[in-house]
Length: 183
Image (tube, rainbow, N blue to C red; front, side, top):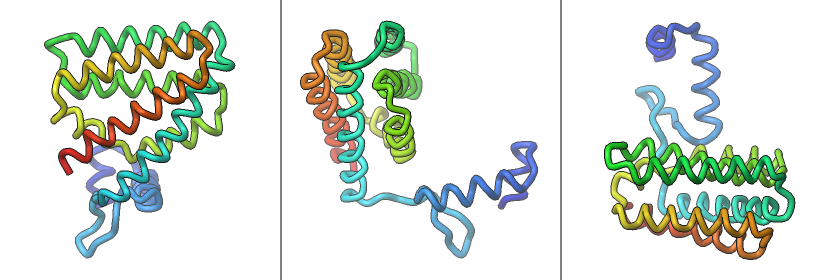
């Protein structure tokens, strides 16, 4: 398997082996008698992942509201605008909307100015289920999520940490509800 993947990527076996070991270590793959398989998460595990995400991203939004620079706020605004344009584009696929959604969430994490928290939150995003969720999510639900992004931005811009944290926690848990609806 390592040899095949390395050949497809035009890479040596060593980095491929290291990546596969990391996938197992991070809980994203499991070993079977046939090789590695993508690990399937149980609903309780998915809930735990989203609870951690809500806590980390919620607190990051609070910190962003309390301490983000003008530059970070401008980057957050640009990320929000780009996500809004992408979300409203009728010709774009859902994977692109998911990508710009993640960019907005990453901009909030960056605006918090806490690299350790950003690293923890980013590693937790390895367990993200957004592409699958977006595929079955209605346009109306995606529009609500975009409106929530605007509210998050407004709270951070207004330096209202309580409101920013509350909105983000609810926003993330609403994402969990979408996941639960199709598991």
